[in-house]
Image (cartoon, rainbow, N blue to C red; front, side, top):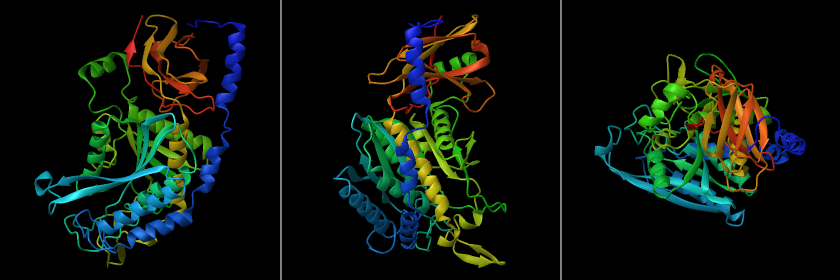
Length: 449
């Protein structure tokens, strides 16, 4: 146990590791950013939009039109990517059958089919970081599975981003597994995400986080703003399946905005500001847009961390609209509404965060906090079974959105922050790898005296 002032030797060692682990020096992250290609993303978006409609209940037989042709092409692309990395991806369909009794937006019984590509981790193959895009599109009437609905931005952009991330990240090895997935049935009720989340639960996947990309290509908002730098990160404050004990503890000890999805959002915000300072990430303290939903929600429902990454300024004339012109206004989600350079930037945001998380060691478990009616804050946690640099304690004022302060404390399992009054701050602990990559910050789940 370390208390107060550590020994001189430990202080010098901790200072050396602190310098190493805080340095912004992982050139691989910059290589990943530079490798993302707007041209490849554009080609994939054009291909997906060219299937006419990708409505979940559209044609599954044709090789050129409908959801069936689209998902077969996506799988073939993942297979090609795997061939180029010595079969490093496990590519498969994951599907569930839905009927008209499962929801009001289901015109007929059908299979909801997801396309999944798993890049197995070298050290923690059962830990997963997931990037998802949606395969399906829709016309003005979601029950209309025949009218053209190219869905260039919603959501060929997110699907193309997941495919491009797979092309780039498959050239690297990671300690944890990375998953690239195309989900279906989003427009009819998030059925694809629900199916994959249940599949993950049944197969005991340890999910680090889900990065749901839904519309990452539009820069011209219906509000008149044109912005190719800003993007939104949606995250809910606490897990919806938390226990009554957890709710009671939060009332007395805090943590109203410190659930696992919110910590994942903070991680993405911090990594983006570190490696892509030209971008402007916006933390949105909400599950999704007002009254709306996305494919991270089914994962949240089962207790997994998940966030939505998307453009900052939406154009509703290009969402869920039949292609037409009325009163001089052009409607429809067509190629002309997509900015491929912007989609490249948001794909890079995903790729660098997945890489950072997949290179990072596991997060500490059973983090507890003490220091009630004392002049110092105390934290303790279970050490991870890994060769690491150590742990970092984060804290912030209770009204702040981001972690303000941090201290690397070495490879220990408890530490006392002298002079830091527990009442005035929120605290968390992250594991730091020897290459400087950190786990998501873990908020205390218990107290001690």
